[in-house]
Image 1: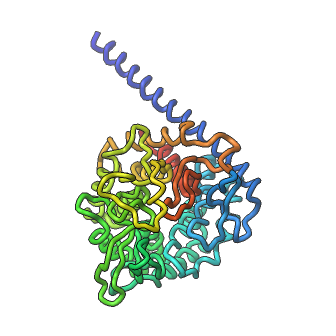
Image 2: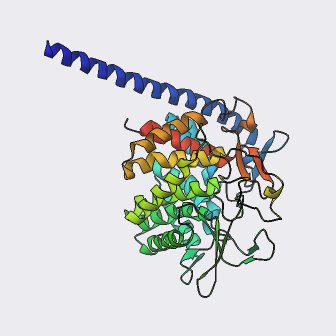
Length: 409
């Protein structure tokens, strides 16, 4: 009798496991089918890369809005194509991914802003991971060297933007560093490993240490912009550029912190960075709405949070969602769950991915200028890309789909 019971429960467990696997497999297959069909339409719409036609967002009339390769976003579309190749194994996607990636090669010497990691590692980094070539490796090392020219020993950080003013139009930023910059460090870690030159690793770690010290508030929400004195390296002020107010939690900025410090922990195994990633995650997850897709800023319209007068957020205080922030965090949680040993992070990531793939956020086929996700926000303060698709939302959605597929659960 006991043997029969054991056999019964074993069969039941196998059946339950198979059902779960089948549900996951069906979910992935359905999304991959949609993504391939939608991306086919995008490729037809955009044509071949010409240096100035990289998909970015959607115009108000519903047409595709593109950027030049010197913007901060051109690496995301080739990166998405590499993820499609990884998801399907179809060499068609590999071929087109190579074409779009190779069109960015000249950026390896670009030094005018900090986003070279987004531009080159999302493209060439994925190319090298999935189809290793000595040429790609050399291009990434040279790109890392170019990014490193923006590092200052006195500040201990990579300069994000060049000179600009804060929204009050009086505070000047001579050495502004944004939380987004954490995302560009992965290319430095890579370059150090393949070149044997520790300087890239050291710059990435120093930038992470300075960001940990200066970008986090006591509750582990993040400031968007920290402005440094170029000579002494002291922090002059902390503010926002794309968030609701200087003291608010801008959703995508918090997402960059979560993802960035997760990645830095992977590369360093320094527990300080894991602790930062976990604390930044927990405060982010604490007040999410039921569908797990945040408002573009957690503190929109709340007492005690006030935009500067030149920010469009002064007059526009609608509570728009930001699918791009959700996609970034979703992808990060699949990795962070392993390091933090938190099963709840995996459960949350899966729910986020299902939410993003639902009709509430995933676009109908042939609509949304052929981007995958709807309802993202670029920058409300700049009155730009409000309730629009964004190429980087699609990129991190696809990365999350890859990570879910590879999840041993």
